[in-house]
Image (cartoon, rainbow, N blue to C red; front, side, top):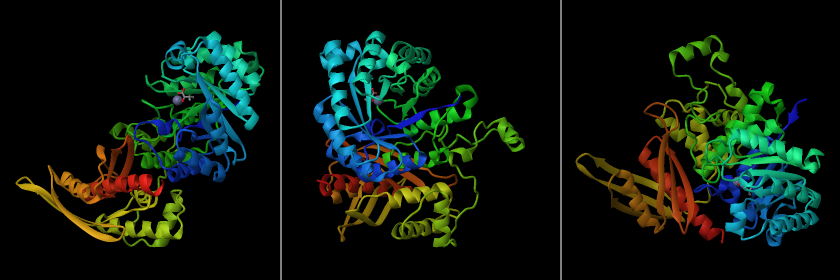
Length: 508
Ligand code: KIV
Ligand code: ZN
């Protein structure tokens, strides 16, 4: 019989914990809406006690996103659990996910507790959480390095205390697929409550040794019923198991796994782009399922094979992840209606104002570039629509650079409507533009990352720049796209600055 595996998405919690991926509440809501379209079973929307922003985002998601269960993480502490409940209580099927470490190294060095103390706290806090919320998940953190006998004991005890899901995390990505699969099999065998199906057994694997997906799949094969994962595999350190890889493995190799998920796989590509755009975490071109090259065939022999019979070199259909194959390109003669239709086909339904903004931007690009492709359109949507209110806006940028010239940039901005300008020099044109912007905005944040990518092929391609700036230990991401990479760089830098100002002033 085919088992249905639950997909617990933690992009907005564990995914957002990765350096540089911080999202504001509006962006989290946008991603949560897309996760609902994907039809994930559970959205772990954040860690309610961690910050006011996280709390607001979880609450907004719980109040507005329909379909998936909405969950908040909480340590096994009363104040954490109460705060988690405050945030998730608004949705139809709330969940609280509480955890405490169970490995000898974590108990001794991090918690300074004996196993019996950990066991008691876990049971007491699951009972407390259950008194507030009907659905409780418990995780013995660092289960991959815990004593299996202790795991069996604590898992049985928390189920008796009211946990309906027990998640087994390999917190540091230490185990191998054979070991991890065996661990799950042993838990099922040795915990009577799991054997009797009194709780769902879940897994949560990190990718430190590149085995997160393999370990999760080994666990599914061994009997796990829920997998925790993130879009594009983002997360702490080397990340979490990637949702798209887990789901497409189960779909493509249903013959082997005998399992399916409820995921609407045609929303995968869009989810991947959205998360990448909003977090500024680029997807490597050779990334399985969603990388730019995942369905590209370069070698002549491969192209020949695919043209004769797709299955020779393609085990999945691009359409299955929502990659449209339409070659219809938009140009400067395309109207608003055509743009709205094309964006709708790509899954973006914009309101009147957003569509007008996107259309004006589209015309600017179409003027410089013969054909505006689907990736360009997605970039326009990301750049123009998902932005915070802009204190600073670009009016004009002029620069000169060359082998025998000292790079110089003249930047004209408006600040809350008032025009300001500055001329600055730099090591190159980008440096000169950034120096002028820095002097104009007086923002002290340091630039920690700058990357540039061509959205489509050709020398007239849109260049997409992503920057990360750091201020008081927080990272702010900005994107900018333009056929001129210096302008794209300026837009990205200013977008990050506007985001910083929005986060630190308007939201206080
Ligand atoms: O990696 C981990 O152990 C976690 C837990 C909180 C589930 O993220
Ligand atoms: Zn984790």
